[in-house]
Structure formats: C-alpha cells, structure tokens
Image 1 (spheres, one colour):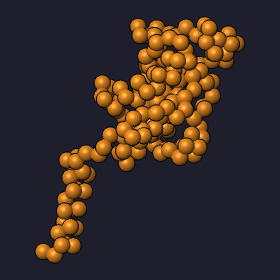
Image 2: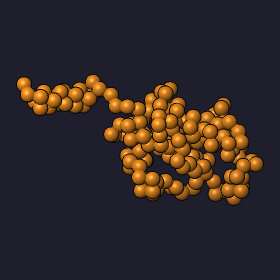
Image 3: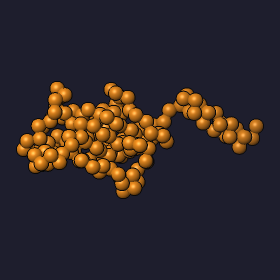
Image 4: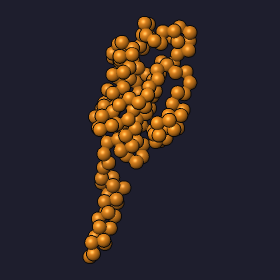
Length: 151
C-alpha cells in the first residue's frame, strides 16, 4: 500500500470513529453546539467565570438558575437568573439596578456571552435586567457561532 493510500485509509477510519461517537473533540471546540452537562467541569468553569463580575457588580454572592447554555467553538451563551444561594430572589436594593426596579423597567434575568481563551473562560458581555433582547446582534458583533443563541 502506498503512503498516500495508507494516509487516506487512516483519515477515513478516524473520521468514521468520531462520527460514530468513538472519538471526542476538545472541550469547547465542537463543530456543533452542545449543552454542558449539569455538574460537568465545563459548565462549572463557565458559570464560575460569570459569577466573578456579577458578584462584584451586585456586591453579594450569587448562584445562577440556568435556562439556556450552549457552547460551540470556544464560545458560550447563557441565559438565566442570578439568585441567592438558597434559590431566593436577589435583593437589588443599593445596586445600579435599583432605579430600574423601582420604575418597573427591570427583568431579573441575565444573558451572557463568554469565550474560552487559553483553556480559561472569559466574560465578553453580560446584561442583567434587560427588558429587550440585548444579544440580538452579538453573533455579528463578536463573530460568534449562531448556534449557541436561543433559536
């Protein structure tokens, strides 16, 4: 068998194994969007990266009730709600959101876009309390895969 035929045969076997689930792709680099499993290292890393700026802004500890989380090509998009560790609602008194809460122009949800750089998740953009769809152009603005967003 010539080297070219051998190389082609090896490539064919490898791609077949991956397509049948026998191979794996590096975390965050999948060609198709995926949902990180609850309790997975990937999910924890994404949420922990988001927690840092949110806790700093809200000046209180938070957990997230996640409604949507998808990852593709080192990008992650998350929607949910920041909550207290017991699952109760965040108190927005004395935060930058108090005026919006008082005027009724506040939704307690969060949307966030993160990117994995050098195996570490970094927050690119997040918005708390939006009453519109702030991520409507994030795929174009940040050149992200469209598949991570809510369809």
